[in-house]
Image 1 (cartoon, rainbow, N blue to C red):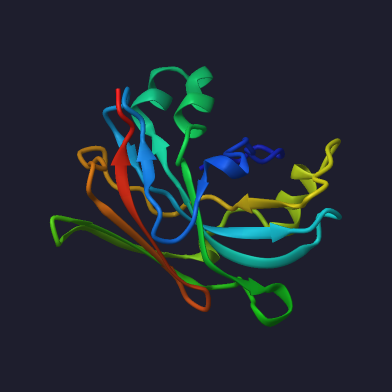
Image 2 (image 1 turned 180 degrees about the vertical axis):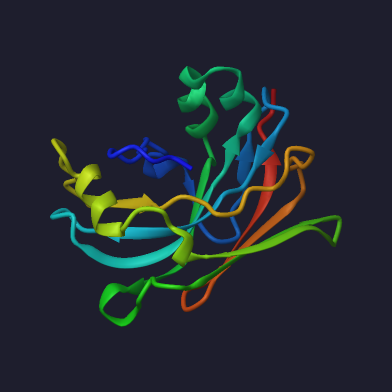
Length: 184
């Protein structure tokens, strides 16, 4: 567990790299270990106020990330590296506390991985994450903060072309995306 005062925050994606429900997320052509990371996503306006919550899929190339920490941007930022949706639960009608997060990965019509976690396992309070994210920078159109994952498939598992990733969070719905490998 990461225990420093400053939280780990990193850039994930620009809008053109993000996919919606039913759209394909991608795995890199030069990676051998790729996983989805199901996360609660916090929707903020331009004043860094929480206006809603949705589901995020932070697709990550673990083999690239593991080679060298300086490769983290390559492991995290590429076309189709993130999916968001299926809806935004407005902040005044939704509490993110203690919500079940479920991940299911299907291959050829059969479930090959399934796990669950809870938003209660998020290590840092959401206001603290937002405060650090908003330091010394502006988001004129707002931003979406992914809060970290409590579910990562084991090292012997990797996403494959044709898999289907389903992430469900109580009170928001289910985000479903097919997986495609980037062509070489």
